[in-house]
Length: 77
Image (cartoon, rainbow, N blue to C red):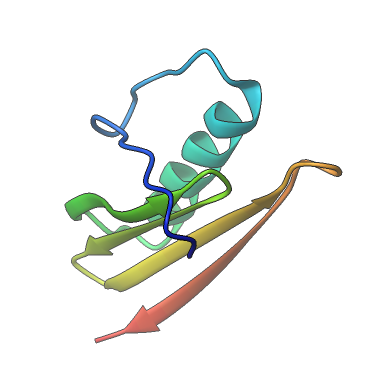
């Protein structure tokens, strides 16, 4: 992730940016699919990525702003 930090408030929060909104909603859906609860939402983030600590491990999500495609990576505990 880059040096620039973007702060997200909490799951379910919205922004004025459709790219960030899609990233956040996708991040939350991915956690829900694994039945993971957020322990530290937005633990690491930048303009096009977010990482959160969950009950199932660390979830990282990244969005390609050109295609709006979101990818997810899990680091399991």
